[in-house]
Length: 299
Image (cartoon, rainbow, N blue to C red; front, side, top):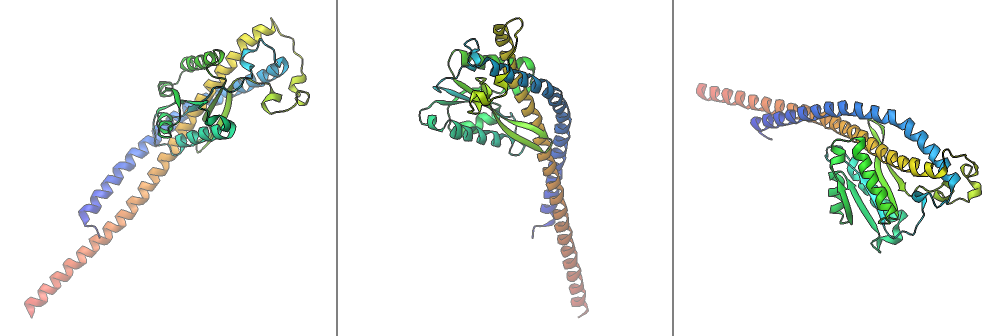
């Protein structure tokens, strides 16, 4: 059994750790409230915009003016993995990376051996995990998740759109953690570019797509709508993914730190019980030594 000094040292160490995890939990909870409000306020807008764009893209179909709906052969595919710069948030980062690798195997399995699948890491933890897996990394961006703004998200989204239009990539997918609640995050895989009509996304015949049967009048013109709204939709999708990932990160961190604080409290209770037992044993031994010494003197 450890001596009393060792147990006291361990109790002090665990108590110090509990203070840190408790403080980190409170910080994450405060940041989560702001991030959750941003996601909640943004979702109705992006949801309605994507609904409109699904109708528009389905109605337009294979129009050559719709540059972002060009369905090409997959000569080069980019998978964008959104994670965080910091750890201490459970399986938040590793789940996104695992899902990205699984997406490459399931959706683009036949292209893996041809070196057509590339990755982009947004967040230091994702970059570290992907590099450890030795997958081909084309780019990384850690700054955007450190202090997320719409302007920074647009810059990255614009770069991705330019890469698609220049045919550097023929398809761009994003993988991120969607915020469900403070304790739950869901990994989502979404095709960012190209924006294909519904019947082509799900392998249906065009006649089975209700949206494709809707006729629209475009004002001022169809070209203007395609030129302005579709890039804006892509920007919003990317920004929304970053907002979701940020809120999910703080939720995962708060939950993880809450569990760590509870574990530290449980460990302190166990160490305190162990300390009391050791102290009682030491006192009992001292009493026995005193009694033995007294009997020896009387004998």
